[in-house]
Image 1 (cartoon, rainbow, N blue to C red):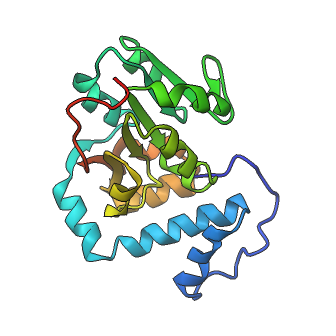
Image 2: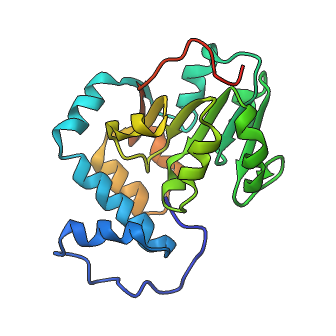
Amino acid sequence: MTPQRYTRTLEWSGTLTGRPASDLIAWMDGWDPHECSLAIATLNAVLQGASQYRDLIGESTPLGGGNLAVFRAMAAEFGSGRISVIGRYPGLDDVLAPFDFVCIERMPGNGDLPDQAAEYLLPDSEWSFITASALANKTLPRLLELGRASRTVLMGPSLPWTSTWRDWGVDYLAGVEVLDAELLWRVVSEGGGVRIFEDAVGYRLLVLHRRSEPACA
């Protein structure tokens, strides 16, 4: 996740190599968006080496590549209720066109709603798809609270693979696995953004809870 607030210079550049991972993960307690993003990236790197990560990945279903793989894979489960998506995904309108959906975005574009719309729309949604980058910008606890009556999917490359999300009321995890590490490094270093989804990483879906009916129905 790249913070939307840019800076010409990161004061800690060139000083991170060799430091304990715990030092960087502790930055999650702060408010600087760049430090929080780096902290989550470090946490994810540490979690990937844990046995729980391997267990969760083993229980999950591969969805393949593509920025919209999660929505395509889950479309058959959507009903007539509202689908609220936190975070803009390129091409989302084409995939969700047959459904009643809204996209809520911190920096809204054409057709998006501002992030304060979540206060009004998530409590009455059947599905809530929440980008895991909300963990870095500190909005995730409130979004999960607002969407507790809906089927909640926490998703994106920033997602920490941990069963702890069950305690937060998350129903599905939709994170990524690295398919081609060399290609991923090259795309990221060349500023490829969502192009990582073409061949470098692929989504996986894990069911934490399966509800017969959403509580808001």
